Length: 251
Ligand SMILES: [Zn+2]
Image 1 (tube, rainbow, N blue to C red):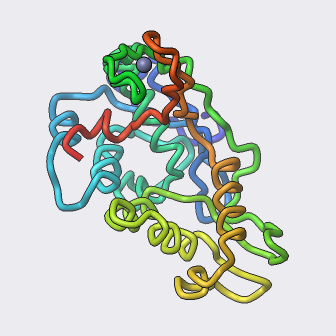
Image 2: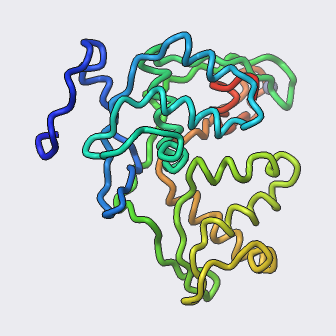
């Protein structure tokens, strides 16, 4: 913070150190510098209303709009906090902010009732947001050179805007959503430019799988996979915590 101009004085609640969060990925500016420290506001009823609002924009757009309200400042970053900025943030950074805001303003404990897929009994699931592991990006870059399936790819990590572009199609056809997603994320193949959807659709399935695995391993953010056994019949109930269903109940 000392390296930059002093921020405007803040109301007491926002000046508390715990309203400063460290993004696991970070926001890159035009000069390639990474900005990770975010000051967040206290959530209000209006913020909650925004999250619950049914809008044609879908879940990703609602999260972008919500984060515009929730983020007070990103340290060292000039320019407005607008939807272009929040949509351009790493998916994992957005997830991280949703989780931490929930933790700061509504508590660390999350309670859900699940149904065991084996014995169909109700199971109480209690988790602490603070116990979810967070993967931090060691080397944030606009894009990464990779060698996958004998090809040289240049790949960037997915953002809120990417999610917004594929979320409608993802419900109907996850493979088609992946095609669209990869066509957005792959910026170059073997020195040529971005491949486009038709080329990505024609890729061997193995290459698409390799790219998907790389994205899963590389992308920063909270690990939402919960290891869980049914207390009644001991069946495996492990699942990925659905952040969007949790935060956007009408999505
Ligand atoms: Zn069971």
